[in-house]
Amino acid sequence: MPVRSLAGQAAVVTGASRGIGRAIAVHLATRGAAVAGIARPGPDLDSLAGAAGPDAGQLLPVAADVVSPGQVAAAFEEAMASLGRPTLVVACAGVAGALGPAGSADPGRWWDAVTVDLRGTMLTAQCAIRQMLPVGAGRLVTTYGNLGDRQQGNVSAFAVAKAGIARLTESLAGDAHAVTELIEAIASGAADELTGRVLLAGDDLGALARACRRDPDHRRLRLSLD
Image (cartoon, rainbow, N blue to C red; front, side):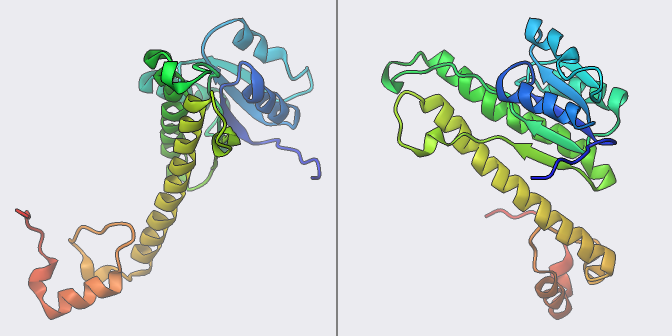
């Protein structure tokens, strides 16, 4: 792939203190992006600021636990205040804990491993979407590991979390596509006959409009006791 400058882009990367997350954050900065690297506090996060070299884009360490909604939201606010609204968010936080047979795994450690990966990705995605929607632009990347696809033993927490991330990512993509189509239809006037009615992403606006023309009472909202 050709080398491209990312100057002018603002990125947020979770799990940025070590491993793949750190490599991504550093790489984006060397390409000129301004990067906020989010991770739990510690020496690895402290050393992130200078990891890309003096000629790189800004690399801002931000301490937060990705399983905490409040901390993730605060980290995104800090990143936006320092670097601007993110154009790219990479959810990469995860742990390699709870390795071994599922039947003898400690339930607390097992669930913690799933939570960091899956809940952390969900909270990161929420914050990314909330900051990107007002400007109608931005890219969200979730990271997936295929060990869970290989029927390999001893990685059940990792496999479960990554399978959940895959389905979450598909759902997010579906949400975004349906919502943008609905907004486009409203903007074009295609939903004018349905003014005052609750519209759901994925509704067949033509069918709803025909139903309302046949029976004006169909437009009204009412509680269902079914």
